[in-house]
View 1 (cartoon, rainbow, N blue to C red):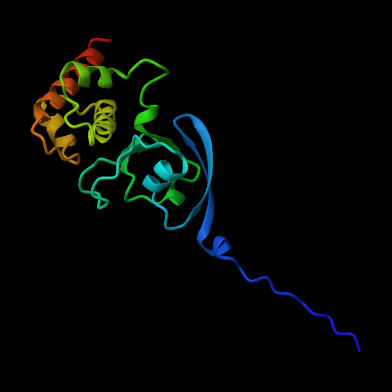
View 2 (tube, one colour; view 1 turned 180 degrees about the horizontal axis):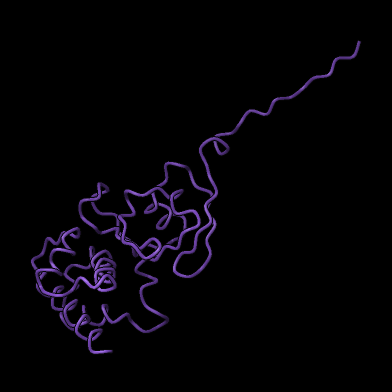
Length: 174
C-alpha cells in the first residue's frame, strides 16, 4: 500500500516575526522586510542607510531621533517600523528641497545653533514642525514646543534665535 506523505511547512523565523513595510521616505518609495520589533530609528539608520537621524537615549527622552511621519513629529526610537506602513516619513536628509538648505538649516548656521551637532537633526525636525504648526509666536512658545529636544551644551538661545528668524521670515512672506 502506497502512503501519501503530507508535508507541513514549518514557519521560519522570517515568516513569524517579519513584516513587509511599504512607505515613502524623503519622497522616495521604500519597501522594507523588517522584524516586527524593529524600531523606525533602526530601519532608517540600519536598513535605509539614513544616518542623519541620531540614536540618543533610546527611551524617548532626548529627541535626537525626531522625524516626521505624515507631517507629525515622532520619536523614531519609540515607534516601530511596522507602524509606518503606508505612511510618509521625513528625516533630516529630506528637510531641504534639493541641494539648497532648508531655511532653518541656514538660520542654524547664521546663529551658530548647531552645538555639538549630535542632536541637531532632531532639533531641526522639531523646529520645522513647530513652525508649520504656527507655534513660534514667542521665545517662550519656541522653548515650550522644543522642550522634547534636550540640549546639553547651553546653546539653546541660539536655536530659539534661529527658529524666531525663520518664523519672522515666514510671517513676512519669505
